Figure 1 (cartoon, rainbow over the protein chains, first blue to last red):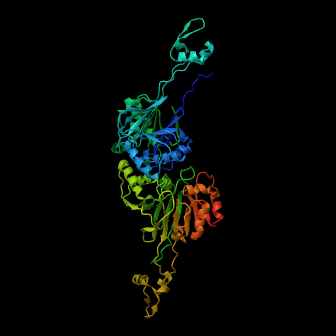
Figure 2 (spheres, rainbow over the protein chains, first blue to last red):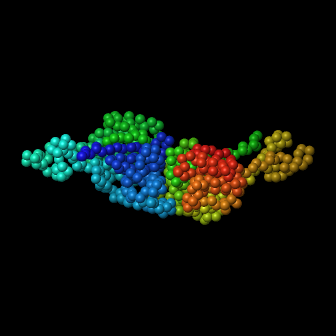
Figure 3 (tube, rainbow over the protein chains, first blue to last red):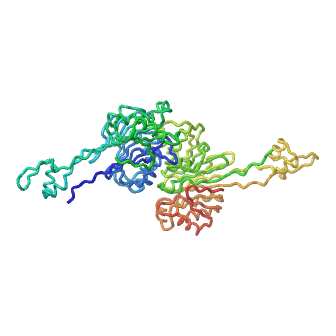
Length: 309
Length: 309
């Protein structure tokens, strides 16, 4: 009899990390968040389906796609990915979370390029407030406003309160039956064969920490997001520019690497990852270096990087 | 004084050669036709801008894009390419030749993802007849109907009657002036210093052959196209399936490699290139082998292949 639940996988894979244009080294924005057996896709720049394929992701495991905003470098891969799902015979529903304008764009497109083999359930993010947009058994996802030229959402992935597990040694010691286990899991104390009460707490393994991940792209420096994402384990924040180009960052509603690091510091995250780099910097280490002066645990991402949470 | 005009470059580069889905080895359909100093783009599957970049094509030299039909594997890269032109500051007009439904798709897309820095001049190919769609100084382009599930065009690139060049040796021999050369080029005979008439024809170099290229994708076996493309120097014809899967080819309005070869034979082309392979065949040599039984000069293309005409 096994009552042990394995510690769930929770990791982020960078599928694309360039801003504006794809290059030979970096695709435009897309990330795969894996939790337990689900793959959540955040943003979908051109060529995302190929990046998913290169990194051996299973297409049928993707049931939820989140699009932060409608600049092309964040969604031009959605046409191909949705079509490929269909060509591969997908039957199960796909949940798409985005501004309602994307629905209009996709409707016109698929009117001409052909019907899909599955149903898209569209979740409208036009109403621009912090709110829970997905609630699964083990994880929930929130969207929250960022500050960009057009309406843009950040996404927060939070593990839920977990059912605490019973210590398997206690199960053996008291020779617990299925009925006993169910009762203890419901919070009841246990009466042993000598009619002695054993406190419920004694049977339980310690609670596992709830992990979280925040995705913040694209955005100008915007402290308001900090309340929402306070204490996340891993924070992705865009860092399009270096400090020298701060004026350009402000003008285009993007952030500098140091601004991203400042948000990380205020958020008290464990680790900051930065991306969405402007092609003007041949080596993103320059952005990482600047961020490190403000926040110690910072990493400039590359396509293919995987971050365990 | 130089009157020699160099023999113009005329070549086709394969940017993508897979059907339906892109793979790690093959992008979906796109080709670059170079003539003289112009680059014509035919079809634009997802990732075409990256293929163009990898193969060092100059984006500003692309002024004419031809889209054969509105299945995603032939146009999903157009969003990114048109946007990248704009991000790179393009000012000159871009000519886009496609079914009018593409205009509707692009209009909705760019309504939300931002205005372009240049003007798109849309040439509507909905009227499905053979006709000249582009007439430049040195080359003309025709569209003609293929037989597919939705309306699909083939494209024929034909060099135009060339201005015949004057033999530079004759220029030296008669010490011709600019005015003399202009007169001879207009077809006049020449009166030499002894008042003797020298026939116009004696000054002229032999006429250069007019070269041509036909692009035929996607299509079922369709003999009607042969009249239009008779005698082309290079023929691209789709070959999605092998003979064993002929029923599937018929059902999906695609061709087998042997059917492509039969069209090549009837067309009396010098060389047949085949592409748009189904992913079910791990090695397209099997398609080439079948085509070779019907038409000797056949080649199965790979992404990156260049064919001089």
